[in-house]
Image (tube, rainbow, N blue to C red):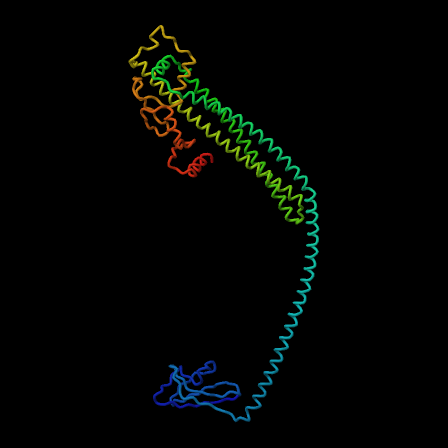
Length: 425
């Protein structure tokens, strides 16, 4: 290390300050602050390597520097220093390479140990896979031995479903016969009679005989609802059995695919079983459609029963009005004539029941020669001068919801079906 004393002289324009220093801008870590003096002379100590040259300048606190100056040694003195430095660098590089070699050896050893550990782990996994493969093979063989038994059980269940289907078919046929028997009776009860006969029979009828058709219709309706509920339960049981059989068939398919040992005979039996299931589904859908039709007809009977009750109430009021203020008739009353035969009980019930279900009455009951005026039970419109058959044709032209009696004439068929289905849900 050389001690260099640098003396500098400043011009008159430079005023020395405590923050001025002598050095170089890139070597601020080696500077020493200048001590101002009266003779404007300062000194500083800088330490640098012997192979480097000093190049100094005076820098004030505003970073204004003077002209640089430096000190150089002769060239022959620098050569040994350069060679010594290169040798030291080579020695340091050799040490660094040795350390790096030792590090690589330790890393290689660790990797070799990791490879050995992975080999042992791979052997253990192979043994476990072999054991698991043997277990799976035994399970597959056991499944193949139990498959014929499950197939036989599925066939037995299908036979049971067929028997239940036949029973449901018989019940539906019986119900269809009963409905067919009720339909002509309802149509026969809707025949029109003269207003004169209606008033005469109304005066001799009693409240109990008037209510008899209501009790009969209510009993038939209750019985039909009970049968419909039983058929629905039977249909739901059939659907559940079919779904269970379908799930078992799906499990059989999965096992057959996993084992990859499917035979032609097994495929044929499975296809037959699937066809039988499809046929069973189709039959169940037909039964549900028939049950739905029976339900709609029962709803129609219920609505007619309600109309019958309303008509009875209306007839009671009219009968009370007739008793309070009898309407004069243009023809002699058959009750006041002792020679006229008294209408029999069967005639009274037939005529009364014929008038009640229709839900229609004439506009002018006091005048038998006046034109008839009938009212639609759906849209409640009056139609003077039409017959009962024409009124029925008009009522049948309406599209009415069987649950809420909503008129859906302008509604599309799919929307109407969704509306009806929403009541069932």
